[in-house]
Image (cartoon, rainbow, N blue to C red; front, side, top):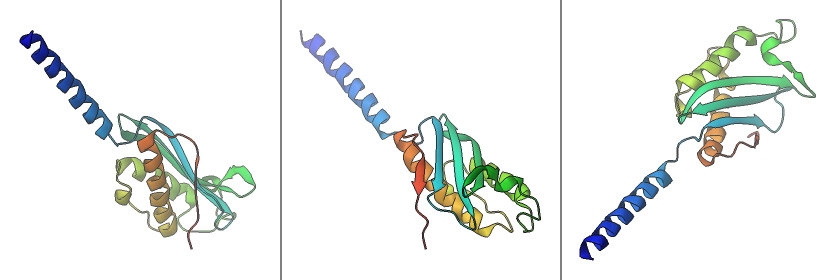
Length: 147
């Protein structure tokens, strides 16, 4: 009887230890998460979509769409439509790649020269995504614009 009690006690300890370890896992849950700003800046609403597998980002899409016309993406604008150097078609994909390269640390998302504000905004959106992903909440996240 004593041996059976010890075995049950050991089994219970193992189960509790495993449960505690699983409960401590606060990294991103697998899934696809999207965050966007509530309001437009310079006529465009910025958004970021990140897919996690195994707790790590495997793909990211940062872009912005014209206020009132979600089909018109900033990354597709010509120099006449959105005059800046470099063109958004050059720096927007780079920011998306930088999110994946940063892993789960938004502070490590490398900025892109010529896109200082967008680089900072990507970090804000990624922070919001990581908070939701820790809970597994895949509902779209609306981020207020500060300032």
